[in-house]
Every structure is written in structure tokens, then in C-alpha cells.
Length: 274
Image (cartoon, rainbow, N blue to C red):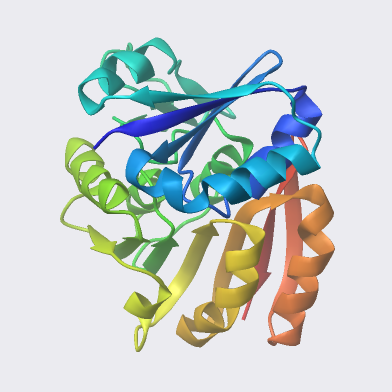
């Protein structure tokens, strides 16, 4: 599968806004450099949203951008050159197979991201990784919704989760999640599932992790509440700091209790319980 790399010249503040906006389209990975945002989308999906993306960029005053087609066989070389290890609070290391191991960290997670979201480089994955690593999931059933590379489900399994359902709507992410779970020795407890929120209908979980985006969180939250056991936690990210009040209000409207938030680089995670 070929991808399109959208290069957008912008400052860091605008990059954060554009990532949140573009996440509503089939862009599934982002990287940032000084004054440059790179957003990745399957080539076959680009045509369906091209006009809306162009209108979005015009709305935010973006004048300099370009689209570059990346052939699938060139992707490994691209991500290897742009994927430094990530250290989360000296507890979680997220790295590629070619990086040195982190034996002194509690969790040394090996990820081959390909085009799946969730390498820890984005602030929301960092925040969610921190939240998961600080919990004891021993004997619990966990849902990783919008799982991407599967990194959160992998950490949850290593924190003792009895089982993890890792659900993603993207076939590439589904395949990549399964590969990464096998690489990290948790394939027997983490099940990659291809599909949307309908895949959890009738199931129950002790904890739900949802790192997606604001609009999907707001729309799917009733499904999460239905699937969450009493006393369970729903931890959400993929939102900007300014979205906390909206997410909190929706959660409380559905009977959840707001437990707090965590912040990094203008992004937020929100913890609630049932």
C-alpha cells in the first residue's frame, strides 16, 4: 500500500491544531520537525478528502504545503531514519528493533510502526503510556480502542492484564498490532480486532483505553460506558487541553466520574470511572 506524505510548513502551535483537525480524516500518523508537520494517509484515501483538506489548510492560512507519494517498499527506510527511541518517565521505553535495549526500564517495548499510529512520539501516546504503566491490571480485561501499533495494549498486558482487545478500523494497523504483540511476547493475551466500536457490543471490560480524537470520543462514549464494568476506568486522549471541559461534560452526562487529567505539549488525557 502506498502512502501520501503531506508536508505543511507551519509553527509548532499550528502543527498541534492541524494534527487534531487532520486526525478526523484518514491520516494515521504524524511527525513534526522545526516549522514542518508531516501527515501520512493511504494514497487510496487521499482523493476522497483532498478538497476538504485543502479547504482546511486555507482556513488556517497555510500557504506552503506539498504532497509526496511514498511507495510501500520505501516506508521502512523512512521510519528508520525518523524514529528515535521514546522514554516515558524512565519507566517505559518504546523503541524499534534496531535500537539498543533498555534493560533498566520496567517496560522495554519494541515497535515496528510501519504506518500505524502509536510510537510514543506524539504527546497523546506518551500520556496514555504513562497512565497505563502506572496501573496494576492484574487479572483485568482491557480494551485498547483505536489501538494503532498496539503499544498501549502491550503495556497493559505487561501490567498484568488477563486479556486485551485491541480494536482499530485500519487494516494496516490491525496487522501491525498483531506483529508487535508477537514481537513483545503478549500475543496470547492481546487480540487484534479489525473494525469500529461495533466490535465491542455485548462485551465487558474493567478498563478502556481510547486514544482517538475528540469527535469520535464524544460519539462513541456511550458505547464505552455500556461496555465498562462498575468500578472500571475509561482513560481517553487524542484531545487538546482546550477539549478537556467538553470531554468531561460528556462523560459526566453519561454517569461517569471525572478523576483528573494529565497534560503534555498542549495535549491532554482524561481519566474517568464508572
